[in-house]
Length: 253
Length: 325
Image (cartoon, rainbow over all chains, first blue to last red; front, side, top):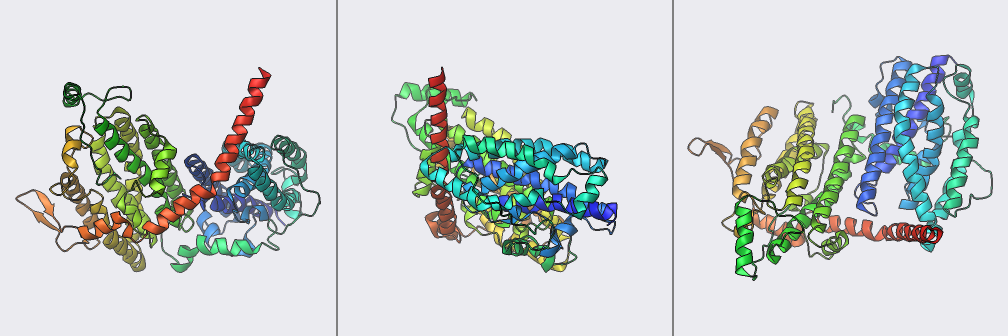
């Protein structure tokens, strides 16, 4: 695997995470519990779609086959997506959506913070910009997890249920394969495992305040970031997301 | 402009106070929250601003219908930014209404009980992607015509909210026009979608201004108080005049065979919308009324545990902070 081949895969992983999770968050439009949350969710989705344009734009450039960010977003089938499974899981209730966001934001912040000093200037530049947005996302998702975890009995129960459901998907973000090895050797991206201590520190602090308990068991669901096996949910998401581009090929929008 | 058929109330207050109030309005002064105002003025404004706020909130739904199917990342980002702005407009407007002594929760309850309305336009469906362009171009375009006039409305907080909202709405209208332009100049299938959107949304957009002033029972008092600044017919004409050249530029067919340039008036003539359809939509019989309200109520009811949870946490924190002092 050449450096550029690995870099392309790495960029797809970054851009597909933000694309798929941003898409999920955008599904909330007009349906959230309170107007301020409608604004915040739209804002989060907007930031993530903006980051997608940068990551996938660069991926297309690195690939060198003339594919744009839109080509990559709208014209690949599920097996070519490289997002972690966590990002494609359904929204569930508001608690599950915010828990998923928190678990992702905490990883994303640590990752971007390391990518700021990437040997690849174009990666460092995107990370720098995205970091500002993700710092705010994490603050908000963390505060909401705390508020709902330590709220009423019902909100606590719902948040614990969300955490129990989502936790087995967390480990995938710290997996390492050949792509990562090439990225580490080139000084482009960190060893995913190195992000774990800071991540654990962040989530433990938030869950302690939220009175939530990380479930027992170490099983990790994976297969998204390698594309080996996505969940059934991704295909449905792509069906609506890609519909216009698929139904009217060659049209400019 | 998402306020239609606002019932205005007569006031039975001290004639001297009413006269002094009217003098301030006539002198072009702004009325501020702590100033004395007739009860009728207050109630009319609550209805108008509340209806406007509800429209911004319900208006997220027809657009949200296409966020997940936006054809490019850029169009998706633009649409997300737009609905975010609209929710923000809802927030300013509820705040403006709150200065008149009614809470946001009370207004939402009135909406859910069917005692307050939102603009008739949001009871129409968005059926193809061009509808999203048309909503920005025609619906926001119509709203701007009204809201630009309302920047001069007599109630200070409403007037200031309009100044801010108009800036963002103008941006939305341009983006909407750009989206439908891409389709009108695109493939035959895209052009067909653009034409379909224009044909379906034209008359509903004209209805946004409300029935003719001749039939509008509430206009007179609202005009005197400068809650309304221009008549429904004047605003509708202005919208038609500015929009027809845009339709022609797009190369789309005019959506109404009655549209002709009237040299004598210096305006376009056009056909009356079907007002029986309008009154049906207002009564709850529009294509989407039931679904829109069901969606909003479900969002509110399903979110009750979130609001309760966050409130309970805030109280616990406050109690802990007090105990620590």
